[in-house]
Length: 397
Image (cartoon, rainbow, N blue to C red):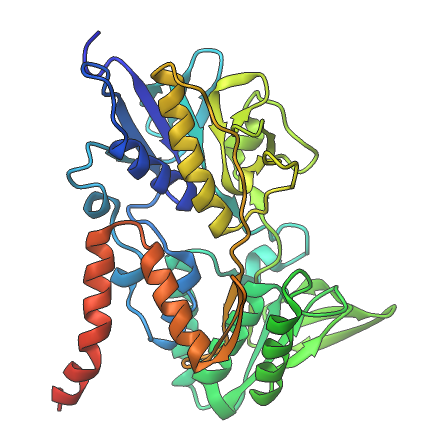
């Protein structure tokens, strides 16, 4: 057997895919059986998505939260291919890319993540901005700069969705726009952050009230137009003038996963065994948003970054174990708590027996996320920048 006869293909370079690749590169492969590990993503960079909001206020720079894959994978032996996945053929064990290249595999890890669905509401795809990628953040930045340099006194922003993304984005925008901002959150539910700990909910409500963010709860967006929204509240329909609409509602499964000939649940996710193997396909593993996963205790695994991080360790181990004749391990999800950024110097944190808000939670969130960044080299690079940044700002005239 040659050293590269085994091929492991990982589709998606988010928390699930990248961390699986890094872990696989660290495991002890038998002599002569080191596999070829290929990571495929349509972007050239990883995104540490919990810090995406910090781009809005300029607290962090893109290189800190979105390092290139080539940098992260240097000297790991993992090959990176920037490409869009066109087709997945489980029977032929091959992936087809948009440029017509084909990648055969012995083991396949599906971690393509999700997309923000906007087609369900008329006008949302044309006029509402998603906030999921660095490109989305850049697009938002361009729109904000245009408004900020215009003579208009008020900048009216509507955010669809009162989940963590909507709330965190509202807090950052409220700080950035200050007195010129008129920001509102719109959601069908009766409260913000419905699945979050009560402590985080209350901290967020307090911050939103202090920042003057309006909450339109139990309200449905019926239509999005260039300069207005149509809303329904308790069977009453009204229109609302708006300058900018941001869409943070829901997650849709990536198109190649919806089309692949594998078992799907009604939401389009791939049901998995506790080992993260797709049902009836032991050579294919699924994790993150696209996986319908119940862990070893039978609990439903949420589609969150912390769940994907934990799944990556298990997926890497099980891929390695399946190729080295070792027993596979069932995934066991541990909820580590939840954190929210609520501004440039405040946050909320609940987990591991702690409840923090304000500046203490802000610092704890920064340090915890620094520790979770993908490589030690990047952690040190970013951490050193954070330590020296205050001193450098004093030296800058």
